[in-house]
Image (cartoon, rainbow, N blue to C red):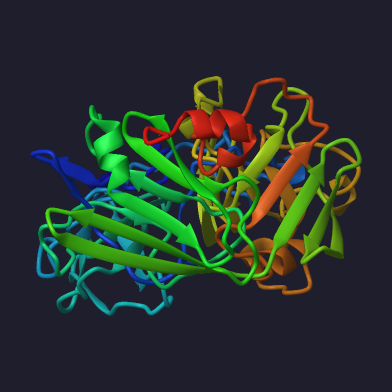
Length: 415
């Protein structure tokens, strides 16, 4: 289950090693834009825009409490199992359930009293779904709740998750990530049974970022148009996963000039005015990778410890065109509550990178809409000249590229 506004910072679901056997589920499809909850450090709403920006610190929280079953990030969910949404102290006003890979909406049934919702039929196997729910209490104060779940794989002796997904197309910065639900002791034995290669001929090396996460990448970004193959072998059982690398897109955010330069296949295609982290909350410097895309998301300062007088520093239900850059909560997203004059001129956020947008995100001419539509999972976003002095950890999202190659290679258990 997930309770509204509960912080979830993990990006990847886990894979299991059960009884010493490497267990993995490979899930088909690519990530698609969908509504979900955000954990980001959103931009500071301007005083004149706080009413439209959501419950920004001055309004009492809703009494309604949303519960989504199963919990956020759940894997191996039964296709006929208990999947649904309930609310206490209020009524549901909207529930959507979509297939991540395609954006297809799943029809559901809302109870007569408005307190529960469930899909009206069985789900598909080995499929990732996103559930987004909205509710109001007796005083019409709204809340949102969100979760991403994945149904059971047909191969029941493969459990967990490997990223990217089989058959997907991703950007040049996307590492291969294998997660485990318990610390791995014999890392060499496990790593030796995972072989990663690229049609480009690039050397690919695995690195243990910690005891439960093994990532693979080449020395420099994947070659555009290449195909990456992952072979998993255990006790005579082999699973092969392939994914394709799309065009190269590397966007560089300069916090000093407050401009973002978008370079595709070596050519600058756009320069976008931005507003990044303020001097009090500077944006991370470093190389980050887009890991999730949401057409709209809820951002609440309390989820990342940002409060004032016991209330969230910001609470915005409908942040448009949001793309996650780190597991700790850095996003690049649309900002409709800030004045047009801040973009390219003033850094105002709590750590995210803001692009000009409109409420609802429905104007495709806006910079945020353009960047969202022209970005894919795995694209690289580099931030430079920010006042932030902390080093961006390689395991904070897909920030693998911040580790020097010699150090990366030394973290391999197989030499």
